[in-house]
Structure formats: structure tokens, C-alpha cells
Image 1 (cartoon, rainbow, N blue to C red):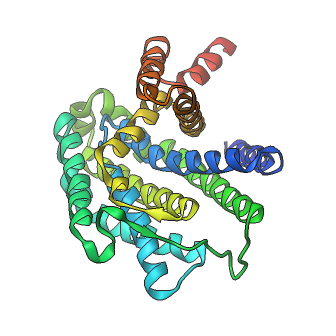
Image 2 (tube, rainbow, N blue to C red):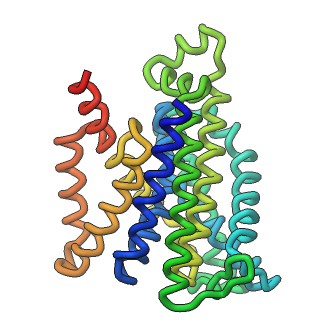
Length: 312
């Protein structure tokens, strides 16, 4: 199983890396943003496996982006690796603070509490004029261990960086999903009471899933702000969190790669819908999601399960 996972991770990176050779600049940027958001959505999928849906992942997406921006602008730090570590550390600390609290709630209560935390951050940042208020902040292009690429080289470096992070995060989450705690979360989705009777703590498992989601949200937010060069409170707004839930529903909780495939599909559908239907692109996205829910109620990941079932 370890060998198979290693080969799959290597194949995934090679496939993503090939994009740096064939994709034009605009497509590489689109894919980089989609993969960064896919990291955030992977955290939501981890919670979905335990029967929880967070409508507040914008909290960590925004927190990671603002942490990287403030550190870069205040201390002159531009290295993407150091910025990622610092942003991840802040999101990890916040996740550890709120995780045990939110893990006690279920259903709509969990969703609304997570959304409330995200909107508190949005409201606070909007009022803080000394860090840009509603206008946000700009951030300079990142460096890579002292290397400061420009133009196409910078776009390629960012794309390859997010590809590496996607492969690492996806592999680690796959290992977690197949671990004892990950399987307990999946069992709790079907019958939480029976899992508790067997001696496992569903609250602890949900805390782990929430904290992992916080870390992934911080990484995704850091990469997104470095790719965009700008951050504003909209990163924490409820529509941003709703977009992440959109992708998680589209992907389903059965497969890790499907999360990133769904993120890329959404980004492409939104971009082309906005291009050809500028006034009704939200309607196009809504119709697309309805079609997916009707045809694939368990998400894109169910296609893999069906294929395996047919093979057996």
C-alpha cells in the first residue's frame, strides 16, 4: 500500500509538473489558484468524512494570507517557504484554540459557528484601517531560497511550488484517512453513538479534522495571496467559504485527487462563464452544481469507487 501511494504521488507530481511546460501563463495562474483553493477544500472534505461541513474555512484562508502579507511587509521576509511555515503556524494555533470547542457541535450548529468565526474576522479586518481596511494590502513577489524569478519564471516557480504542496498534502491526508483515526471519523458519519460505545472519542477525531483543515486553509491562503499579490477582507467573507463548500460537494469525500480536479473544474467553469456570460455567470455555476448533484450525488470521487466496483 505504501509503494502504491508513493507511485501515485510521484505520478501526480509528474502530471502536474508537465503543466508548467504546456500551459500558457493565464492557464498556469488559473491552475495555481485552483490548486491553492483545492488545499482549503481538502480540509473541508476531511471534516465531511466525519459528517461535518465547515462554512467558515475562509477564516484560515484569510488568516494565512494576511499573516504572510503582514510578515512580508513588516519584516521584509519574502521567502515563500518561510512565509508558508509562519502562516501555517498561526493557523495551527488558532485551529487548536477553536477546534475542541467546535468539535462538540454537529450539523447546522457546527456550520453556523464556523461561519460566525469567519465573519468576525471579516468584520474586524474591514474596520482596521491601519492594515488597509476594506482595500486590503499588497504583497511583493516571493523569492525561493534567495532566488527572485520574474515573469514566466515566477509563474512557473509558483505553479511548481503549489504542485509540490498539493502532492505532499494529498498524500498525508490519504494516509490519515486510511489510519485508525480517519476510519473512526468515517464510521462516526454513519453512526456516532455506536462509535462512542466502542470506546472511541468522536470529539477528538473531529478536533483533528478541524485542525488539519485549519493548516490546509493557511497554506492555501498563503499561496493564493502570493500568486495574486493582494489580499483583502473578502478572503474571509461567507461567499468565499461557500465556494470552498461548493468544491467539496462537487468532489465528494471518497477520493483525494477528486478534490483538486473539482477545484480546477470550478475555476475553469467560473472563468469561462464570466467571460461569455458576464451578467449571469453565477447562474451558470448554480446549474452546473445542480447537474453534478443529480448525476453524481456522492461527488466526482464516486466515479473511482464505481470503477473499482465494476472491476471486482
